[in-house]
Image 1 (cartoon, rainbow, N blue to C red):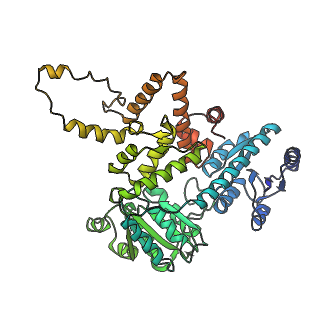
Image 2 (spheres, rainbow, N blue to C red):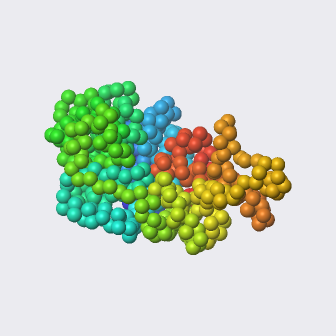
Length: 492
């Protein structure tokens, strides 16, 4: 078992934690400064890092940033005096697992470290599972063409442009190109250029020096530096602002760039793979994308088919995603009936493979039985079918007896303030009716717990397990999310 690393210049703090953890049979290594920790990381790595913020010779925030660059999934607990809580907030933004205010209760500290250790072990198990899962699935001819292209490019580090609709799996292809390339041992770094505000994107790509702008408390490496010797995946490249396109072109031309606020040129050897759902030729004609950058990126182009173009893969993908969701949630995998599968196979999936994965995850949580029938499918699939059936029924003339025989419509649940029918609320209503008809007791509690569990699960997925950040996104308190996780058994 890996050790718990304690970093604090106060000998008494180190001593107390060492003794407490030793009583729980947890191995410990102690350090009095950040410099020694970084040196130790050359040969070893911890299960959990517990670090003070204010230390001579290097702050805990600087240490956090450097450790997260090397070990992004390592849980880091920040110790801070009450007067340092502003710094603790900065630590959370830098990816800290939790903070421990001084003076602290020793049993509470040990319990927090144990939670972080469990999180680390879960991450390791998930990485092992991910390694065993296939990279990509597909028997359709269009996907076989993609697989053949990846094979042909396996000995090359040429720039690749991947095109395809949103949700079609462009990042999976980029990861496969990296894994089967001569740079497979190097890092794979991905960035969605459309998801980052323009004023932050430059810093994300090229890094910044300390003091370069408000809030830049420490120097930070950008994605180009992080990907040195490996692959940089630039997703949604068509949305990149024009001024940054110019900087990107310069880096692709000579491999040199400057950090924001920096004066010394830096060099990074990186293979660039770009992706977009847009037509870049049209963007060039519109003046929204540089033609010279387009030609620099468009060395090899791979087009990913939409899911509706490879319907023969839907059953295989659905089984895979249902199994994957079951493993993540620790439940038995749901199975699709032939009728439910047939309904999936005729759906157009505007959100492509990502939408199918989300539907399978929803079914794992919400489907009432192990075998999924058509009536159990989410509303988005049933609405198309209902519309098709409605179009085949001839409406009776107004005022006839036939009109009186039509069922009285239920009052629709509506999105507040819009008057637009909300599919997820309609689905909740259907599930409530189903449970009530079966005579399930405590329907309120059952559905409330499912609702809360799904909200928390989605927030933790977005924040990669960081509870404080998840609580902030959900608009609830830190203690509330901790209590709910325990009550709903999400720690298991």
